[in-house]
Length: 461
Ligand SMILES: Cc1cc2nc3c(=O)[nH]c(=O)nc-3n(C[C@H](O)[C@H](O)[C@H](O)COP(=O)(O)OP(=O)(O)OC[C@H]3O[C@@H](n4cnc5c(N)ncnc54)[C@H](O)[C@@H]3O)c2cc1C
View 1 (cartoon, rainbow, N blue to C red):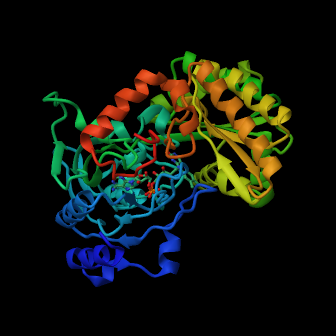
View 2 (tube, rainbow, N blue to C red):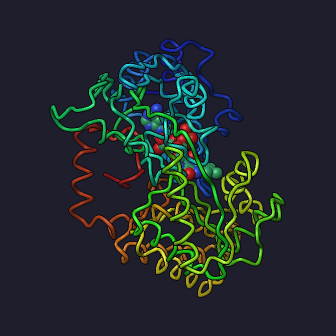
């Protein structure tokens, strides 16, 4: 189908005002938060109903036109970059919280709603929707479902897949499918909800989700622990878990990250510390007191130089803002920022931190490491200049050491950011030929013309 014909057909489906074709508009959707990937789409279309999505998919499928679904474009794996041109399908008009069912503690929410807006709305009922990526104020629900996003509360509360109980999706051929729903237990057939959650826009378009909600914790206690060696901080993380305490949040910042955040934010972080841990326990007030005491004891046993409890709500807010600003602050150091999210079993955190340190030294690159230490989910963040070819080669070599090291420790390439384009070269290392073929078979069955986010997650199918 000619481009002009495609555009006319799309206009007939959604209306002229929801089809963008000007080069400056197309350019805005040629990239996302991932450095080094920019590809021009032919057209950007913003459907407003599931039926419109279905019609667009029928048209694209019949004419074998690539479709790149996009929420807010904050992903860090080039997941929305329109590698092969074609259609960018922008989902932000799906912006309604349809229902909050207080008897079943389920919210019915459209895919384009911003995650923080869900939490702001359900706070009046004393409920929370726990998945909270660093981009909670900008990321769309559909994007977080497609990436199976985690966040700061993942350790105790789990990640997106633990809260998506049902989906409305559109398949590559335009079929509209409903999976799961309000039933807490449901083993009728394959668990398609779980399959679609984390499928990175390669198997379907999510239009609506049924989300499990949980009661907001009655009390919380936040603290910051300062360490002279990052190894001690790593051991303290394993120690807290071994003591059978599951904090809501257990985050680590290394020295490079502490100094950078303090430079920009001036919140009084100890710039001479090798690492700090930010910890929050929550729940019933009595249990919170008890857990906080136990955590304190483990921190001391593991040579924490100093532990400070958040004085009040404002201080607590300051600490968590400092953590959320880790990536934006590191990103200010150099023109290019690669933030990775290799993850290892928690007991292997000290070994993994050593691998990252060694990679930085051997390849002479700057790596700031922070992350969800309680999940074993680290964010080694390499700052560099992509225009410098020699430096970029060293960066790639450091990444290779980090990914291979994580897999050798029994870890994974990605704890939450997904594979997209960036981590494709290492997929077979983790999954083997058989694992890759099994995933490609699923892709070919649901999207035989390979039009949904082609080139991502599995490479060429
Ligand atoms: C500063 C910063 C901090 C971050 N912190 C975290 C963190 O703590 N934890 C974490 O997990 N992630 C984190 N991320 C990554 C990112 O924010 C998340 O992956 C986010 O969930 C993506 O949402 P989005 O709406 O921007 O999705 P997009 O970037 O638009 O899309 C992401 C993927 O989902 C697909 N997609 C989007 N909408 C749909 C849909 N409706 N149906 C099907 N597929 C769809 C796209 O094709 C793409 O593959 C961070 C990113 C940044 C920049």
